[in-house]
Image (cartoon, rainbow, N blue to C red; front, side):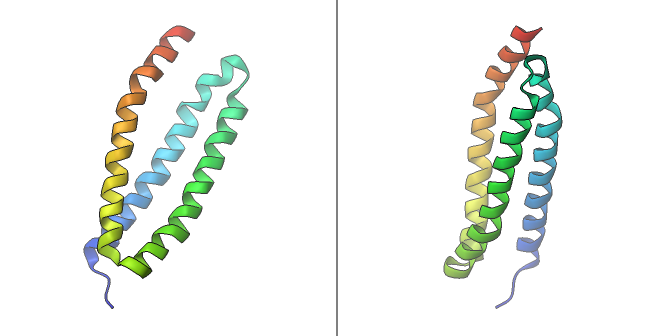
Amino acid sequence: GKISVTVIIVALCVAAFLLTATNMIASRCCAAFAQYGKNGLASGVNNSCSSIAIMWQNYGILSIADHKGWSTVVWLWVIMLLVCGILATIALPLWKRFKKERV
């Protein structure tokens, strides 16, 4: 079958967003743990989670697309973005408190 141009554009945007977000988290958040001597641990956890996410993206999403179709994948992406937005909203006050306590 054909893959619509919209799906390709959304896939590229999601991939670019995920790569950019990962790099920003690695550079900004991990540096906050340098004061405790744990920036290497924070970077390692971040990198391992990123690797797991990339493996899941490469295998899982393509497997779902193969069995359920690309429309299911697009809905899955929308759900994942909403969940990530909710989790970021929940984590933001905790991060602000952590940053305030370490100053």
